[in-house]
Length: 542
Image 1 (cartoon, one colour):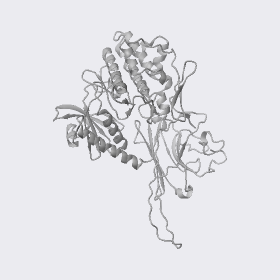
Image 2: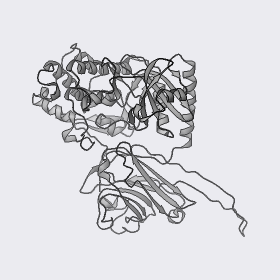
Image 3: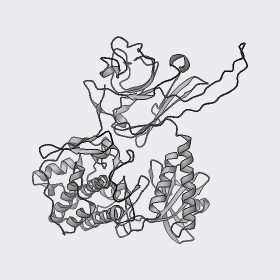
Image 4: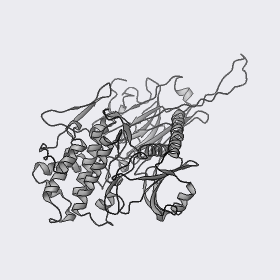
């Protein structure tokens, strides 16, 4: 690293080599801060491809603020035959097809870079800070060797076509950025092996049945828009009617050609096909034909919990129903964590993944991110996945999922059920630490006014104050920033059922800082009886 290379120099340049680094490099930058000395003045945030310089050789505008805290996915490819370096990006929730989302630059990397290169990432802080997080990344190179006509010295040459990423400079205004460079072939082969194995296991078993694609298409009116119940990152859910079974079903159709969708299909089928509990959505069947992946679930007439809590079309939930839903989610989690043969860490517990049957019984669904673990094993590095606002701070910082991180998510959902408020700021789609739901309720708890946080739609006489206090205190307990201070889901249920006393929580929200040691073991450090929750692994910026 060059000396004096902080701030806008990105740890790669300094004042003496702004236009030419001491070490040849090519990088792609996601830039949210304008350095007037070298950045374009006609655009605030931009994406640039830079050839051994802080001045971008190819640049396009980028609306970073519109995607704050969404998951970004970036693909960088170099085609040595066409000498084209290209970068494209998209988002899970806030993607806008009208925005610029790609950039390319013609460059012969063989003349710019040495034969051996380092692929890496860099981000720096200046006077303005921002959170950056690199979740996962992959690199692959496809070598194509061809014979070339003998030269005068009778030597053979070869043309090497490779995918070269160069440097990706992460100066993102969002807390989370996923970067990946083409999926490795062995990963795809492994997924195919898993899929074949799962198909064989399910066909031999007595659980979920296999459906023909044509039957499911017919049941959902060829997956027409009027049958669509909802849509997520890797597919959509449709309402269907199976004549042979004389029943309504929900059909989850994964997006065609989505490798991540295939992974979620494999994970969900593998996990949920063996689970049986009254508070889990029942998997009825599945389909895998011609690269199409579908799952068939029992139909939930009352839809998802979030539609009732935050939607305007549904009537508000009565107080007894809210209490029943909370206990139902807790019961499902107890089964997953302690009562099944293996521990299942869900990793995506949120209001939209809680479904309601005709009697408003809660049923937890969507196991596409779930992980199986042995009961005695502690937190496991799984890679960060889930939804901001429901993710435990230590999980965001370390990427290590655990029963405790699931309990945190349950605590947030419990607070949402009681307050009727979202954990995520609905105006900008991001978690604001100073106004987060957990902190807002904890502040009222410290003032002895926690009951005032109850959903105003219930009215002053529409709920039991003692029960409301119990639910919110348990919610705060479960959403404690320090994972070591959270209860197990069994302990939380005991308090909810009045089988144990309410816990005594600090009047001020504790703050816990999590560190990952060299052995990747997450530790929690607190001082003065309070701790600080670190919601991102670094505060970086330019």
